[in-house]
Image 1 (cartoon, rainbow, N blue to C red):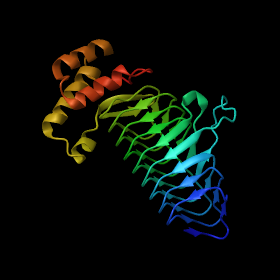
Image 2: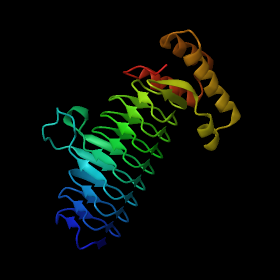
Image 3: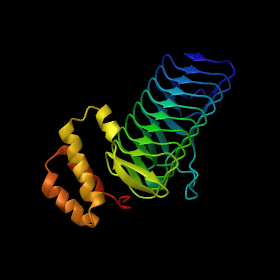
Image 4: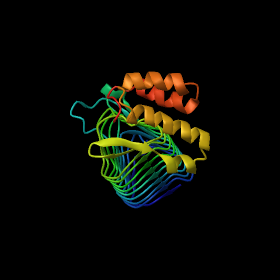
Length: 257
């Protein structure tokens, strides 16, 4: 371990092999940090926070502070961060609340750019990018490989599907299904995440099926229930279409059309 002499690390904190903690950083009593994670100067890590291996947390980040939810009354709640995440300057991540299952959970290989905020009870998958000043309210779920643009604000309880992309400065108030591209104020689905699908090696036939699903859901005059029924009948045997259908059927806020 490399812990700078000016860092304040509680003796009960669990610090893994190869961890680096920079000058003036503070690590609280109930924090656990996995091996080879690097903590830059002036970082505060508090609360019941578990950080996995190989993470990089840049200066002035605030990790594991209590929720800003006014319904939080001091109950024991958690923040769990996986492996190989990059958390840039001024990022804030809060612990969960009793009303949201008591945990905020971050997967692996995610990038949180400068000033992004992850509120209580958010659940993140893997390989996600949140650009500068992305602001996520409580109880938000984000699927694998999604991209959230800069200065995007997402309403509490929204869900962002796998490989969805949200354009910068958007206001998201309803769910964004997998593989879709959304933009606007409020954000509306404008098309599919074509560039992302190609970069991830999706073949032409799969991309065409997703395009057709988009046309049925967002370009026809059918309501969502009828569109989903048609989608099941036409393309429901394909895994990526099943993912879209399942997402919509589990949506509580409705999808952004």
